[in-house]
Image (tube, rainbow, N blue to C red; front, side, top):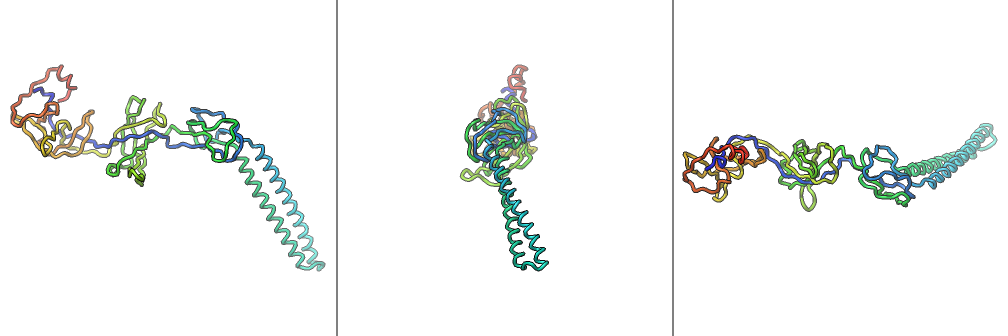
Length: 338
């Protein structure tokens, strides 16, 4: 029997993990919406363009709103003039009361007229400010830095309030939203690391658990976990990603998973003892990836025992075997495994 089919069990650092899948999305994104109705003007940005926070994205035709502001301002000026007239009348009546020419009741009536004029002026000013806000809302600005992901309206189109104009995404901070079963989510903690395989990206991309949703999803009962993905050139929102989330590690006596056989009531491994095959029952523990191969913690096998890989097939207990020293070509074909 070739020695490439046999391996010595040994203490290994097993890193346990959970498979995760999901779609990349930007941590920060924004939909710019129209705040006032009107005809859309000056919308020049398109998908892929870069914008800065505060940059003017588009405008809504503002002539009508500007006219309303001027009208409201004139009404406020007229109300202010009435305040001045009521103030002078009150001052005159106050002087006449002191001289005894009119009764205090007339002064009270003058004060009431003055207060009413002041209230009318304040209401007119408030109305002017509301219309100024509507005029300012005709200018649409970018709320965040980022790139245009979608343009949802066209110049010249008449838009209603809350109509979606553009979507902006910030690709400097991407995250993966992964759904885990309730049982798997128990082992997940903020700060745990993961390695992701993303379509179109040759090398694995590191990620870190940033947040864990405190509530399970209705219906599926799954728990959403959010992983912050390291920024790299070429990453885009919407790309599919899959990988392994590391949930723990431990030092344990381990064997390759394919060496464990389950054709008996209890799992066992085939090991070589004194030149013969012995079936050794084992208790299995944590699993982990080592050099692309899955290993499993196995209690019951003495450290350093020679264990047959799964490629050796099932051998009857007590079968006499002899391990052959592999040639260099055979070692290369076996990938240099012991």
